[in-house]
Length: 226
Length: 231
Image (cartoon, rainbow over all chains, first blue to last red; front, side, top):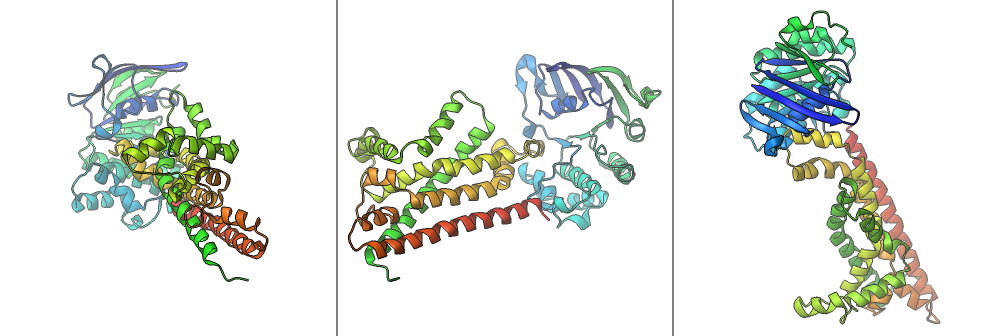
């Protein structure tokens, strides 16, 4: 269970958002500039809330009243960025292995094979990120986050930087991920169609405030959020 | 003409040793300082920055004299080091290495700092979300990506250390076999009536070393860049 109740001021803009989600995929939906990235930045620990609480399954990650702030590297929350952010000096295989090494987890060839299969990246292992297409890069980033064995996976518009053709290429992988990997996810997007396909619960965000929360029905009439 | 005398040969070996030791000792320190200047804001940062660059603009003889006052046998730090740790800098080759290290430090730090600043901090964030503690982010992401700058800084610092003259001769004098580097040997030779040919030999050698250093730095940088962009 993910519980978020935070407030933060960022220059002119402010976020005051509160929701509790037990969904397998929590969709964070809103127009660009609604504060989606800042909000998951706070869940990941990359941003510190001015006030509030973030907790997962009862474990407190942020609580400003208790001065608790668990740094990102101790949260075990995977983050797939819109721009992939693969390490350019490492091969695909080394990128995939990075989280396991940093968390000092035992080598798990079965898990590695499962993830490589699921994302169809077995043929890319010896390549460098510079030699990958946008879609391939995003799949590797997804695999890299999964293999760090997170307890929650944040996906920040993972299809945002891809053209339509590439999107339809990646979307099935995300659906498979939702159905086969048992990791809860927070999926950020401004695309209602993507949300309908993936999310089990929706948090509607507008100007830094949560305006609606519930099943995918919440999305009706919001194909062009403003 | 190209037969080196023992004195010249000694000066060359000494110069290489002094510059190598100065560079190797200064590099870890330089990386630390470069990282602080590139990634941290702290009180007195601009003063620290100015202090590091001071040897670049100060007359070398002033730097040498300040070193003599501080690290000389009766200097504040020098006396303490000699009494407690038995380390003596004045009129020793180690003193030449200290002078060269300080004189070349700004040239060493600058490329490292620039290359650390050029490392995409979003990659460091990504490493954090994958479970890397800050120091491991530094050793596995920041430093490898800044490697071209580190190598360029080392080569530049080494080349500067080899050629250093003013501060070295002021601090540790010009003692053949102990503190007489290529530069001070050339200086002595051109003041000797028949020293011209010998001086010229050393001039050729120091030019070759400097050129080789520049080519090496260029080669390292190109290789590293190629490796980083992974094509």
